[in-house]
Amino acid sequence: MRLAGTLLAFVALAALSGCAHRPADDPADPLEPVNRAVFAFNETADKYGLRPVAKAYVAITPAPAREGVSNFFDNLQEPRNVVNALLQLKFTQAGKNLGRLLLNTTAGLAGFIDVASEVGLEKHEEGFGQTLGYWGVGEGWYLMLPLLGPSNNRDLVGFAGDSFLNPSFYLPGRYDVYSISANVVNLVNTRANFLSADGILEQQFDRYLFVRTAYLQQRWSLIHDGNPPLEDFELPEDEVEAPAAPAPAAK
Image (cartoon, rainbow, N blue to C red; front, side):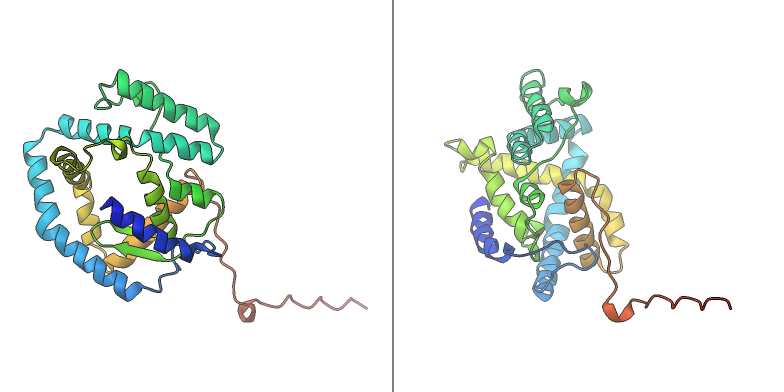
């Protein structure tokens, strides 16, 4: 899966040149027919595969255990967060992320307990896709990837770059049964965390548009640390009203 993402990322890299940011309600989506077909495939795979497994997982796994699994895999992402914070010149945030990594890995029993959050070091996500956005690289085309879900050219390149910052990438047995099993557990646990959002998605008239808008807004917010600038919605020239003529001077 990681290799496929890496290959796709290099293909996507060519589409990033000269791409500027577009509002989430007017994205560059020239592949929409293909994206919608992939979205339908993903929904079917989720309905008959991943969602039932996630529900069974929730039924047999206590909430503290599921939280511990989430904490463990989140801790594996901290090296990525540290490096990308540095690449964005966020030195204070990089220090906090490093503190989270050290504290949770040691006092948090390899990351299963989020001790860092309890002492005020809250989780703060930083990825290579965000780094590219920070330095002005446009998002390119919106993409719906098979099984992986929503993305865009920039985040696909970021996905490939981030894969080299995950400690598990350098394990000699990362493709053995234990590593694959761990990735499956992470996938199922992540899906279980989003079961509560299923009802919201099912209420949408056009689920594809809802997911696309939500994803692009969330990524734009992350790039700006939760404080995105107001987007410019300029009227076309033919819709801009001419200034009113000055009133004639009184005689």
